[in-house]
Length: 115
Image (cartoon, rainbow, N blue to C red):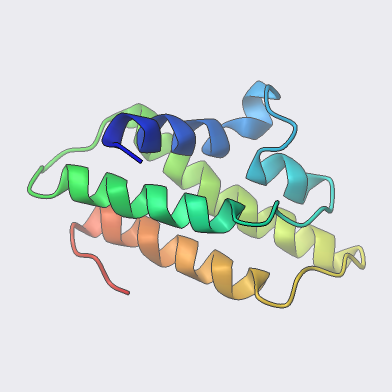
């Protein structure tokens, strides 16, 4: 995955609830109480790592990607919690994956990758 592909992918995943363009987007699936597609979280985490590498040494991040990352973290946790409160049986590792997603986005904003 190259830098532009990673960026576009993260924007489409992070803004899915607004655009409603991709019914298989991560946030759309969570909103419907459905588990992510196999490999989807891995793709998101890989795209975040690629974005981090592309931004290394830069002091600023553009608003579009910052907003998408913010929404990706915030909305995924909200949808997960809402689903759990409604009795959705999420995959056992999804909560940990959401923690990894949050740490990856935090690493991008801090400029220091933490595994």
